[in-house]
Amino acid sequence: MDQVRTEPTPGPALSGAGGLRRLLAKDPLESDLSRRRFRHRGGAPRTIFMQAERSYVFGYNAVMSREAEKIEELPEDQRPFAYEGAAAGCTLLDLLTLTRGRRLHELLAGPAQPHRHAAYLGAGRAYALARLRPVWGARRAHPLLRWLALDGFGFQWSLSRADRMVGERTMPDLLTRAHCALFDQGLGRLLWYHEGGAPDDVSARIGRFPIPRRADLWSGVGFAAAYTGGAEADELWSLTERAGADGFRAYLAQGCAFAVAARLRSGELPGHTTRAAPILAGAEPEEAASWTDRALIALGHEAHTHEDFQSWQSQTRRSWTRRHHR
Image (cartoon, rainbow, N blue to C red; front, side, top):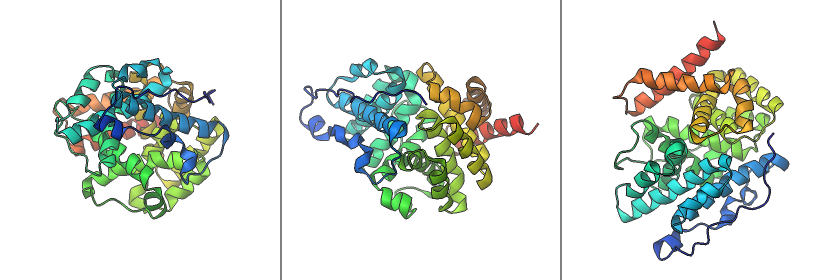
């Protein structure tokens, strides 16, 4: 597992925040997952998850303080989480001031361009904070990546209501039935945090959900395990065994492939992603990412619907299946 920094990331001063922005600013202690009833193994996994959320809060507050340029001062592997937070901040401001996505578009057209996956996840987190269903009136939103907002919505909604979403396995009535699958991917990412990246506990938790929901939960787990990290190699092997035993090995691989593709576009691959790909996806990082690229090209330029996004995922899973069953 990568060596991680344990000292706090200095937050924006919020000196440029006034009125609405100061009211919306987050307390940095919100990133302390020990304040929530999550399973904590201690050591590196706990530090990794808390650092990811700390970077998210940093980026969010950087937008509120008009200091988004400070995100570039963070370590490269933490910037995607910070731009996720920045996108959440921009989206929340856009929603409250009825600016039709102007701030989010400016962020995406500027420094967040290499971090579009993270930014759309962050946009979804903002909708959850506002208790609104993710909808897209935003100008020039990416036709397919915009659906990641439902994933981000699922993560944030479940983070704020873990007892109900994880313990009672409920589903918010804000969503249409067609969007619940993407919500569950975000919930799957949250489960990776919630169970401290422990394969046995993650698998046991997923096993309590109805079978139709498990596929997308495993996809979210695969994304988080490769994107955020938090597990040693032997634990990742155990995770693949448990996903296979549950019948959803391809979904775990597909989630990993999407995470690798997102990380490659953000910059140099973190060590934990490089090590996770051969285990979770059964392929080197570049090959796993190419599955998502080929599937996207095959969809064509007109792809934009929720069904198209799901087809993008299913074609990626087919690449994994062909790779491992030939």
